[in-house]
Length: 271
Image (cartoon, rainbow, N blue to C red; front, side):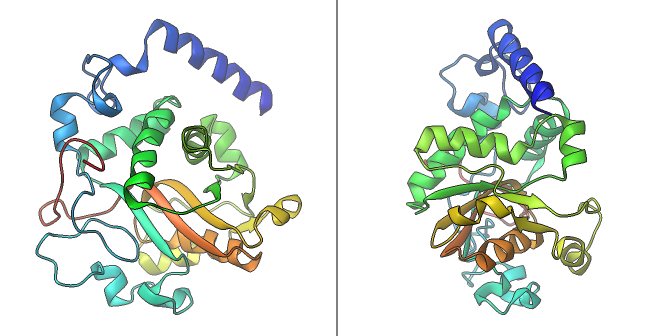
């Protein structure tokens, strides 16, 4: 694994020299200059569903500007109420997203995960850093959502870990990428309903034995690319809290939202 990752890192560094990532738009691939925020062209930066307006007070999903409740329909409706009875029906304490999960965001995530573009992680970490600063999110430990080892070997990297490590360098917050582990493989979540998602990941995460000392009484910020129902975040938070974490918040690049109803901002994530 180490040799494979080293080879990929070297190849990525060479590609960065030959084809600098900052001159191609992350979403559409068009040529841009390096002054563009987050390596997004003028069109895509306007079409990203930035979470500048109302967001769910629990999970961080983008809400419609006209929404009367501070909670999204999932959190307000108790869809995740079986997760321990916490306010909003989740085990994690609070969630934050940088954008909705529309077509532009889906393209970025797809390219990042399946087009061998690990360097996207540094760009997405810039967006996450601005969200941390804009929301004044308190954390003293960054923990990425882990992948099952076989899947990570196949992909060559864990996108959440790439983002978390880059975010650590940009913020100075300690990162422990191997703190959480997947104890078993799980089925793909994309075609599962809310109940099936919870069952799929229940008990699937644990804190590594030699990492437990780093969790106790820490404010943990869990890092992932996408938030949908929160089942994965809850399962991770459950493992972290059982090992003594003081709090567990979640920060993702994009969270599922209805683009026809949500209030989307333009420009920068905190602009």
